[in-house]
Length: 416
Image (cartoon, rainbow, N blue to C red; front, side, top):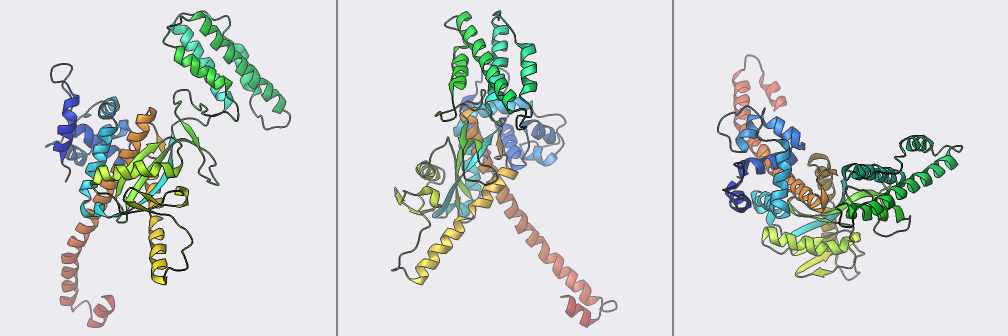
């Protein structure tokens, strides 16, 4: 059902026919991305399982069983960078088309969630230690001689920082934290003095200084050195007060097809609604009539031609039928919550391993596309089970009816 020529036509201009090694087939690379998110596999595992699974090989265009790996796992990284966000959106568009009429519902249900980044839980002590390590690496690469390495000192300070919640260790841990921060600042300032003004590491040093100067109530804080775009998001969860990553917005039809998937930083939910509806129109070619949302989207009554339905107390002038219809529509909106749960547990949305803001958006769209592919696979599986079930049941009933020597008529009536 997949129209592979769509990807061939869109991605062929991204390759050069004259320079470099011959490229891997586009169908192979796109198929591996689909299989990776549909089966919840890493780059390494999808390449390894492809070499063992003839169904995977047939799906990606092989006519006979091929021994060996189709490509290096790192080639999937380069391919994702090559196609970018527009390529991931094209894969999502194809997954919507495959679902046919189910994707043409005039009403959509919209909700947001947090896509966590693959970073450690950020603390000041961790960030300051990483700054010290990065400064040592920069000094070694540029052959800058530091006045002191602080190796022995940092070992003892790390011991002092342990078990800080114990009453007898609190003061010692606080002093150790201040000392580590002072050492980090000292190394950064020393590198600033000794490195040339046009050094390639000036941006890194500026980032280190921003981390060292930020306080508890600072705005736009940095939570990770290798992923500085990560935001701290609070969704009001009892078991997880803060999540570190980015916000993801999804739109689902009443029949269960994801028709939009977009990434944001930490915007208010109401500000994510307009771009999400624009993507729905871009991918389906139709403007939704109604968008059902939760109370986190307050402030939006209508966006373009789309009416926004937010749960509220019904007016007294409404009839019982109107109130019941409105209540049922909001109950149906809650169906997007388990869909987000499946995206996280089954399609790699729970923790994002792709780098940067572009990686955030690509992972969101590929997870949504994988959900749509899996939905269609399950639909066909149920259909074929029903088709095969009917002749088998009729044969089984005839067999028991004709076997009067083993089954009496009373037992047959009780059985069926």
